[in-house]
Length: 278
Image (cartoon, rainbow, N blue to C red):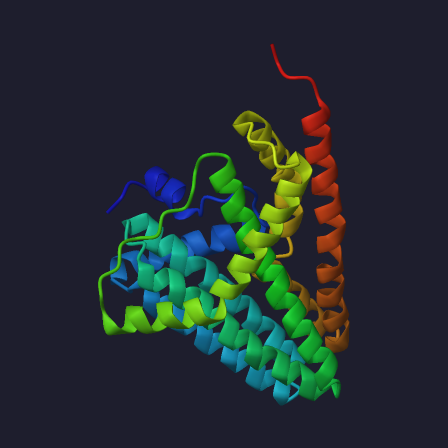
């Protein structure tokens, strides 16, 4: 078994910025749960499936208007969602299957949760708008982190494929649903940066603008709009018998994105106008 210090360092996901609720609450709990599951030989994909099943259970409880119970079950879902990756990283078993299964499961569970929220609030169209808004926010979160890593010289590398049928199925689903979002996000950032550098071929100038654009403050804000935070807020709204408040929270999260996009462009312009170091 890996020594505890090494396991803990490997268990935490390498991100440009951390979600506060993960760093303070769910991360340590997920680390402890991963240590319990480790000697039992529980494979990480099984934890992903348990995470999805727990999310569906929470959606069913919302449908039944058992909101406090749903709030509790949602936090269990978040715990499992954080534990599967930690378990995989501790053992060095990060797989392509787990990478895509996790994203696919989260999307399907979100569909169930927002369908239930639409039913319990009597506002299905607002729930649909909030679901789409959350999908955009989570996509922005993912792509901001990926582009930050690439710009700062530490791109994420997918594990090699095994060729299994299940792996191909979950990856195929991801490619159909998420790839268009990823391409759109990258194209948007690429066009904005191209506009800022004015078509310059100076690689140092382009890199300076990109690194200023992908700043850590923006990463910290976007990270704290992530799924763990979203479900913590949803849990609080359910416990307070105010599920409709969460729909407004998600729409507000989406409204922050253009504000920070403008801020990032301002930072890039400032970096471009600054004198070069001697």
